[in-house]
Length: 122
Length: 113
Image (cartoon, rainbow over all chains, first blue to last red; front, side, top):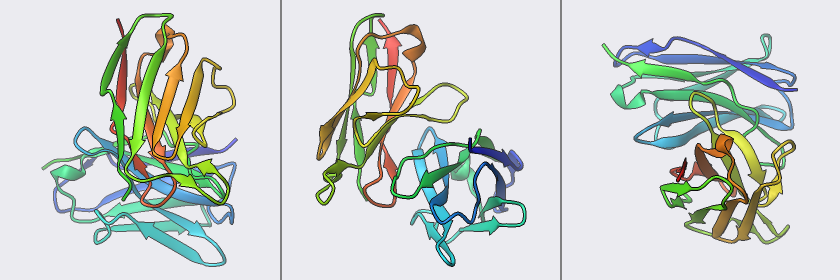
């Protein structure tokens, strides 16, 4: 059974960097049959897919246009986890952030991490 | 981007009655080569991540009660709860996975009448 465990701070100051990590158990971040995704949820934006990282002989990252200039995903094979960094945050980046998996040949998200409420505030 | 629009935004149904939630995509999510609709439904309870209910528009996830069913094709889809139970009162989302960026509907809040 695949499980995702998120960690990271719940409070970030404006203009600083939001960093979250998602630890994977029961699967591998370098699996050739999965992609590892970040989604956020806020009252104003609803559920918003931020992008994915995945390994197919080499590492690929796909980012949503809305955050492409500010976001980075980093897989860590030694710890079997992947991380999200979002730079230059504003109040609009306040949201619950989720990590989740998509299996090859599918497209739905399952399982999900527990979610992390990140508040951007000074 | 494919825009997903759910209706209604909220719905009040009596316990034991049928609940129907609609989801419309701005373009077809039916993949012609395999005749599959790239559409999923989720249930989200407060403080929890979304839970997968239905994929391929009509395939129930393992462990999901059979009172939940999905239907539709192309651009118009429906999630039906045949007999509403108290534990079903929460928010439901559709999601397309036909193309990235993956997108979700705005959600439908189900309430007891």
